[in-house]
Image 1 (cartoon, helix red, strand yellow):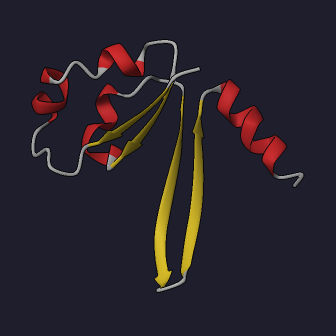
Image 2 (spheres, rainbow, N blue to C red):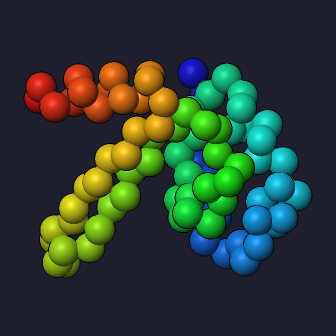
Length: 82
């Protein structure tokens, strides 16, 4: 399965992300990992898994996982068992 890395850091407007043709990747047959996804939340598929990574210290990070849709809610429930 293809894995696509999309970095929206340098984009200032949602229209810029649409101009890039990201919907071909977001709604295609691969997995998309989107950095700075908050810049384009309105174009993400309705069902997605949002992972927020927070800075705690030089060697520490926090992870917040927010599922959207039944498929990703089920995945998050499974992760709780690890």
